Length: 101
Image (cartoon, helix red, strand yellow):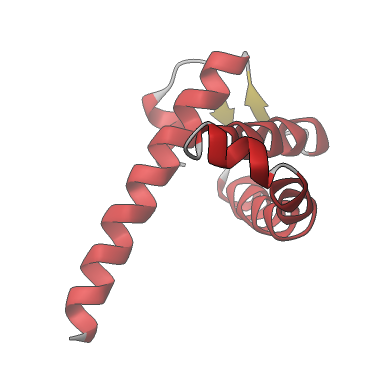
């Protein structure tokens, strides 16, 4: 929901849709995304991980097609959405890790 508030080209219609999108992103990334990352590992090594990020963006666009209340207007919006989600995850995990120690 944070990324949809920050980006004008992204929208999520409600809290339940955001939860569904989060679950679907996790499932798609852990199944299809994992298979694609394994198959394209040499290309990811050559591009220093940039291609793995590109696969994550494609997985977001796939979830966009699967959920009616979730909209990413363009590829650039999906890229920015992925960057915001990555930064948010990094911040949350760093805070949670400090609390654990």
